Image 1 (cartoon, rainbow, N blue to C red):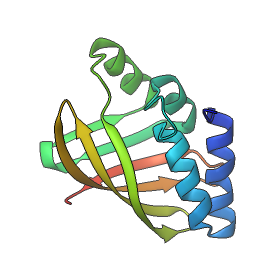
Image 2 (tube, rainbow, N blue to C red; image 1 turned 90 degrees about the vertical axis):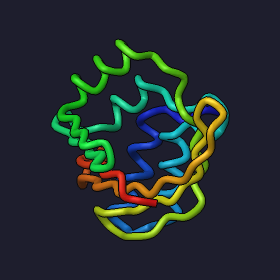
Image 3 (cartoon, rainbow, N blue to C red; image 1 turned 180 degrees about the vertical axis):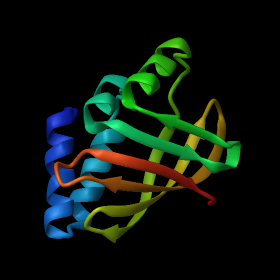
Length: 130
């Protein structure tokens, strides 16, 4: 069954409170829809802080605020990439995920840093070079 935003947030909150990598990974896989449906803009929205910042230094892009991110997703409803988590590291508020990506037939790798607040919401996301 697909995880909803509140289940993801509960796992993220547990990851922060208990320094729990397994909870972070499980929450991240739920966030990514790894159990089948893939990324859901609605679920993403609920698990992001209103003032979230997403940094993609490789393309010099920075997105601020979950409302503007949601608008962008509605303007460009591209097929979402399929993301498979390989490894997570970090602790408490800051976690790094290494993943395989598949997008429109092309495969790649991603390393992404997530900063979570104490409520289990995503505060910042930064794409690191794989």
